[in-house]
Image (tube, rainbow, N blue to C red):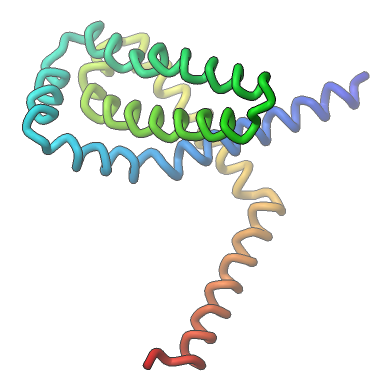
Length: 168
């Protein structure tokens, strides 16, 4: 039983680490993409209003995407339950990417205001410290190191191939 518990904890830890790595990978580029979209006149006005919200208003706006995406994720699970695994998976992945983009943008707009809430600032600091420790552990693991070596070798091979086959 102890072995099973340890195995489940390890599996959960890796799945959580993969999710966090995805968030880390996507957070900045997705936020920049939405910032670009936010330059449209109507959205620029909306973003300026979001930045002027009081702390708990900013918190409500920051949490809103989570609530709005819940029905979409439930729809995806229903689709999977109906045997439409590909469709349900695509809905979940789309919701995850869209949700990450929106939350990243909202956080960039509300971060300073949210940090005025003492409890939020403490939780955020603890989250960042925990996340960084988890990512350091993942980056020190042999699968991660092996992946980095394989990626570097693939880049080197690609560069060599491009030199051998010059473009006409």
